[in-house]
Length: 188
Length: 188
Picture 1 (tube, rainbow over the protein chains, first blue to last red):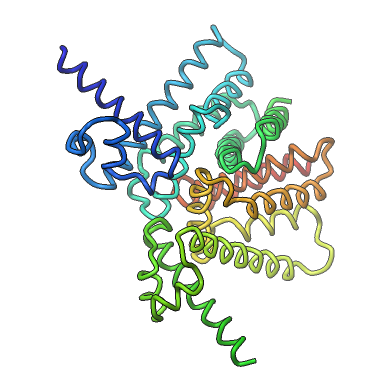
Picture 2 (picture 1 turned 90 degrees about the vertical axis):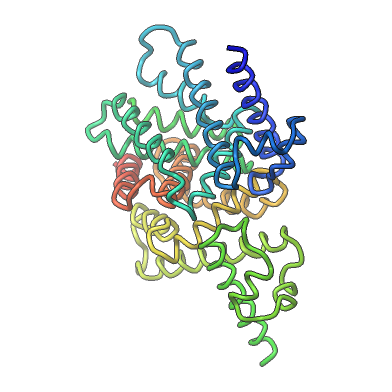
């Protein structure tokens, strides 16, 4: 039992350090030594979790997915029983968008990973499954005539809003206005 | 005169080499030596164009902007005089989306630059101006009641489609279906 707790705590500590370093300097600048120093552990300990750059990127992405999933689950739990489809969709999307510091840190790492997988498509199979799962989830909540392309479009809009929020192209107000405008169009 | 032509040719040659290396290995992996070897010139020659990583990233982004602008201008020219707003918008967006190899190479570099500027917002001022210019251009073509958020949403949708096309999350058919579905909604 204590062994398992130790492993989980250590993993979380290294994950936190990795996210902080990546959020400040970019994922491409992250090294084993960096993350070890930030976490206050040995480089050997960090190496236990990822031996190569690819393993480190995979680990970073698994942290991003876990944290995003946790944010979405918490946000849905706060809604109570049987929320209306529009409210449910808006809640999920705003939980994912980089609108607070935690989500921005996660978003920066996710964006770096997307850029990384754009030249190494093999590394992106888990992400592609997430995208397919999200479009199916969104399509199930829409009552438009042709839900598949509408769902694919809404998910792409969310992704683009995230990119523009992270780069400071859109303010939070602009991004939320664009999202609400789209939801108004999908739920007339 | 010959001097100016030489400079332009050399710049284009180095830009081509940079785009090829970045498209294959990712922008974060690009080094002076890499680009020089690919271009068949000396490292000193490449260094004439960018001395630091930041200058190289800026140079890569200026190439992306030039090539995107050229693609858009050519696509619009093929339309002839006074195209309908919907057709004009679709033409501009599909010229930018990574739907052929040239646009994919440009898109991979653009995505890497977006990830880079997400941790260094100061480097993104030209991109932010481009985004503002594009939303104003799109808003001017829409006849919906509230064109600003609709334009911001359509641009975000385009950006997200680009990210999902590069990562292989969406096929070209899925991306174009999502785009057309959105244009149908904006031009009923």
